[in-house]
Length: 122
Image 1 (tube, rainbow, N blue to C red):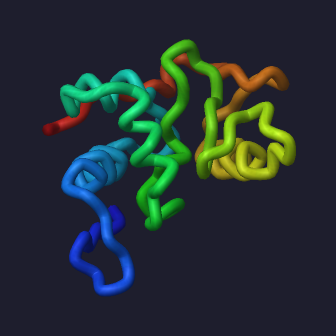
Image 2 (cartoon, helix red, strand yellow):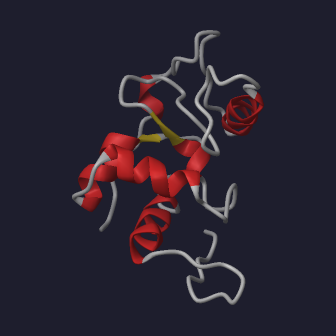
């Protein structure tokens, strides 16, 4: 589990981001969760979670790549959605997940729904 130091002299994160990143560290390798599941655990919104993930200075050690859309779509990574012009960030997300055994179709949909994990301890 990666450590989060919100008081690091070079990195400043909000209390909300600290909560989001703590939950990210709970997602086991080989599993994914969803923006919706994180937002429910935080009593927040999926967009707020996405904003915190987009700003994650600890990636990939704090595994924001393990968060996908509720419908099983791979979603974005580092602030870039799958169909953004370069697509390079999403290719990296897919590669990180493939290394952990989480696979997606050519259209970016999760193949094995049993990979979805939502058992957060808040």
